[in-house]
Length: 375
Image 1 (tube, rainbow, N blue to C red):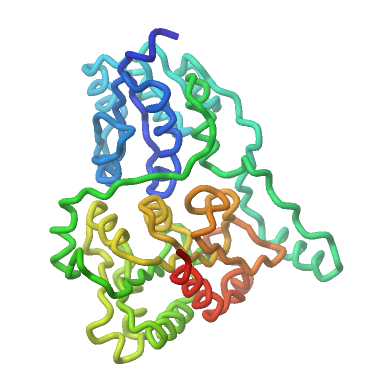
Image 2: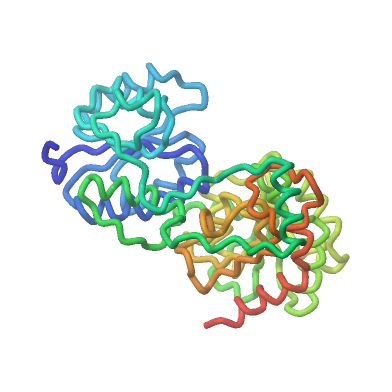
């Protein structure tokens, strides 16, 4: 390997918001190992606000949704990078850095792309596949539980996805000891947020975030009526304000939640930001929340990385693999009903969504109160 300590390193970032947050420990370790290197992150345009103020990154390059791989590769070639770290497992991401002519190209070994890398890293120890269960498997697991079969043993501590990215930077010579994902909100983002929510540094009231959507699918979504019941009870106890979060596809869902809230709460104590904020403004709003009640989504990871505690009803996915923050962080509350079929990793539940319907609103309320009572 050529001199990486003073090299020009390109990191090809991942394309999903939650996954991008989970790469931040690896990038911090990379910066720690090579403080004199120039680190550029290549990311989808929609994620650029995530990285503008990040301490691990010197520069950010973006690409539009329909940019051709050839166009991206030729843009990179002009930058004369010495090293490429490819975080996604896709053939396209490896082809981009190959076309850029970067002499050293490291990423995970995968079919159809190994020849595009100069260093193809084998699967990491502790890797646990996110196996999507079939309807037949789910029914068999439920029947087995009824018959008294032993429950699923816990996953190893290295199963969480942050270790996938730490293992890659370790192959470059950086440390692999885990640390919490970390983000910084851009200060100027408050000015954009103020169009919808009165940002006040002297605000003393309790602001609670509600994030009822999940782009992945309904098997990740705690029922809307449960969100409303929990919010109404918290308002009765705390006289707090609420921010409803969501992307452009969640506007109708956010409105459905707003109209389910009790009349005193819905008038003047709740603001829907669904479909209104760019990523930087979303980060600012999450930073203003004392706690976020959320499904397992990208904003969950963003809030935790900004220092906002999260309360998360987990359904079809696994907190051991994709939970917020550093695994085991006590400030977050990760709730599971844990039926035998969970986690199934499906977008839609083929039976009755018991993994989420069996998490009652009073359990979420108790979790929020515990977070607010913590030092």
